[in-house]
Length: 134
Length: 134
DNA sequence: ATACATGCAAACACTTTGCAGCACA
DNA sequence: TGTGCTGCAAAGTGTTTGCATGTAT
Image (cartoon, helix red, strand yellow):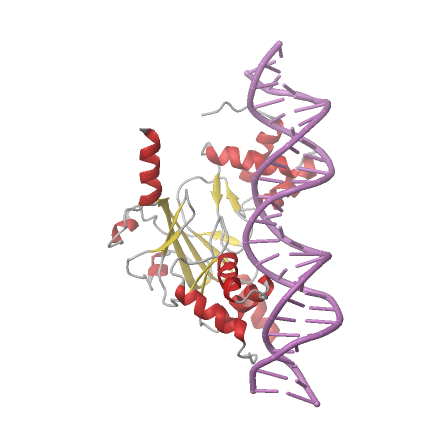
């Protein structure tokens, strides 16, 4: 693996990500860090997110349909995404390490990981919708 | 639901998608249709894919990490994606309608659907890689 | 001292949109 | 005949890259 250096920017990415609980997008993270460190470049955030994810120091959650999310919690777990407000939540359910065993014929495919994303409407958005109907 | 018209372009989208077995991206579909119908605009392909998916006449597979895919087979099923060549395959395994029942606490979330994508290396890419090592 | 990292801007890939003319029902 | 649809180009997102400079080791 290529050597990587300790830098202020890298530390800020990790620390800020740990502080934010909402699976921020790269852009949200950028905005947040920039409050404390205005000279930060967005390219640096993207670059560091990629490097740190490659080292397993944070989790890159690839989101269909919208900007990717990042998570400082690196254990395998699933997510649910609100189709209205696009917020992403952790799902409290077991991780199915062996789910790929259900595949009848892998056609020579070598499965390494899987992503499971639930979609629906979060409580907040459903409540707003109710109010609007009155 | 809003009224939609039958047009040559819409028919071509549906027919060509049914002919292609590889879960094409919008762009691949566009290129294919354009061979027979050169005046076609890419915007029209995107617009029609969205309309037809909304009517359940084709399946829109939102792909993390790369361009979305489309499938004429509209039953619920899962996919696997090769991390090397990016091809997408159907997975031959049961669809877990009730998988969301494993969630301990939905926090008020109203779950409607879920996406499950396996990732790994397809047989073709693994073989190529073996040859390269010799 | 030597690479790796940064900031900036430009490029990139994918998708959506405004608009004027066209064609299905 | 009317309104939905088309082609075109431009704009919009999210992300990556080239380059000169900066900085950790």
